[in-house]
Image (cartoon, rainbow, N blue to C red; front, side, top):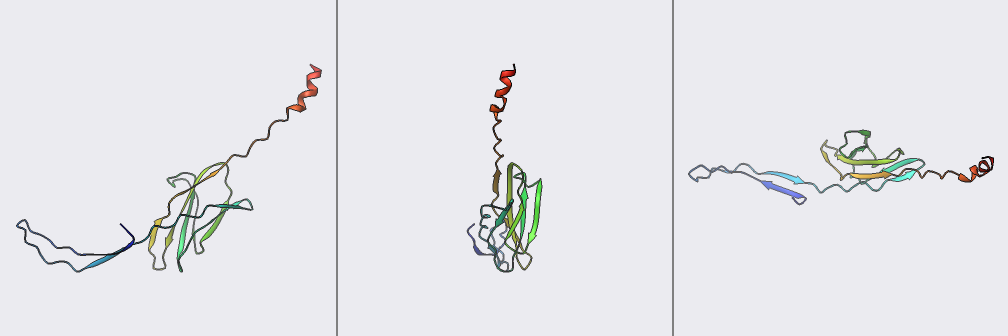
Length: 137
């Protein structure tokens, strides 16, 4: 459903087709989907994350080694819209946040962001060091 406020009410209808009175009107609001976390940046051997935040909100930040967030590496509730974590080893990692409004309402998670930390390129073995050994054979 598009993000906006909706109003509804209900009435019962008998098997004979007779309609009863409508209930009192109720309303609910569909909130817009949260923006994803900005791409992580590396700062001094750490990954820095930031996101948008409305006034008074807190955020739950999650960083996991699996897309289902079963292997949680970091989980923080923050008053500021940013955090850092130690740069993990090579592999794929996943992160998301959700807002906590001042009234206690907890929103849905942002779309999951995948982060790939590449393996360091191994240095080639200096085979030229073995050249003098060939003369000893």
